[in-house]
Amino acid sequence: MWNHLVNLFFPKSCAGCHRFLLRDEKVICTQCRHEIPVTNHHKILKNEVIQKFYGRIPLEFGSALFYFHKKGIVQEMIHNLKYKGHEEISKTIGNWYVEELKDLEQMSAIDYIIPVPLHKKRLRERGYNQVEGFGKALSSKLAIPYEDQLLFRKLHTKTQTKKDILGRADVISTVFDVSFSEIHLGKHYLLIDDVITTGSTLEACSRAILKIPNAKISIVCMAMSHN
View: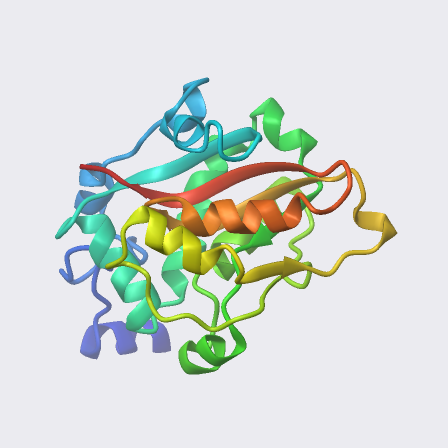
């Protein structure tokens, strides 16, 4: 009853288009769900994520749920997630994608889900890692441990969005490292992030994880930048 009264006077809006949500809608309205461009990467053996990292890191599996376009629904959702405090978007996307991933043979081989980490300063500013809800939704439904202490960020860097791929890679290559023990040897790690752009951050994180003897790496992200 109280929730109905709150929604009556302070109706929640869609994370993609900002229209008021109907009673049965949560976080994303039905129209946006139909209009969001999905990649179907999980159905494609040599998809764009696999191709993007070919020759850079030895991926076992890679995919993203959405295409990310400038001024599109997905950009608005990610912006609200990262900069407007709408942490619930992360879990919603995770619950959406896990329904597509849960029956894949590749997921049964994963030992740990690893988020791309924020520096402690950025984490304090934002209050949360934007991929935590995404990762924990995958962890819950796939019964795979979520591990956010293995991979860490050594340095705090300013946004790299305006750098070209070489400039960005040069900065990011020294940012990440791992703290592992004997139980982590020879495991298969699923690295998660919000948006794949140049792939430099994910490449650097993967290289750090691959310092672990006999480690394997896969990547799953919320979205992938698409022209």
